Length: 382
Image 1: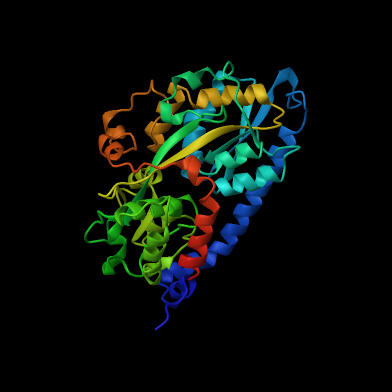
Image 2: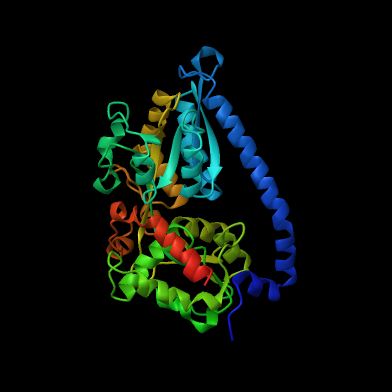
């Protein structure tokens, strides 16, 4: 019997709570779009006010626009990085424009090369080389960003562009109230107990990382042939409740709309605390993949000096420690010493370091779009 599409399966068995949640989502989505549009319009105005680097205010004050990830990342980054930076630099204001993912950043910057919509932008390391090649990002001036010398080797950019600002790991997430036996392996995603209770948002870097993890599990080489991983994911398709949980996978696990999912460790740890332990992130025993976010100077920024000062602060030891203690990312600055209990929950822990699967992200950049397209076409749409 042919399997139903994910959306059909989800709608065929809604609970009262899920039906109410789904009915609210169009309104919430519309509000989110309007809010994001308003923020972006404000950012464009402040960023393009004066080509001299002034935002037009008195006293030489400047406003720089930072494009970063939405939700808990925005909350933690604003609290531990942006606010302290503004306090230390009262002549600079930072406007935060939230985005969903790196592909959205790439699209927005491509559409605004002459008058860019941001001065500084986060971007996944698998997408950033494309932006660098298209000259959407500018190389940093090492004399203006002295903390570049304090980075661990894996955080440094070989071509002088934006360095890493966070390290994270792909993980399995589960709802501790609903799942009797915690998953420990990537193979557990195929456990019959989780059928129709899986949330799999893998049409992005999460899917790319999952392919690499499955290739190791299947004793295959991701550089030679990803068919083994794609074929294995196809067999999981009929068990997936949703490929695009709303508003995000962490909320879906917390609420019980889904019981098991794939996601990022840092956000999983954050939600573990905020949910009172309902959300639980797991490092699969076969190992996992490190995810790197880079922080970048947007080419043609009207506020280059202020933007580089902000980047320098964000990769400095003070900001790195404060942000990682709050949000459970691993530090990129070699001078940071996380509290032991925090370190054990990040990619910097001895267990996670031992179980990292090596990835050639520079090589993968040229295959990233093709891999995501195959996931969309053959796994999600198959």
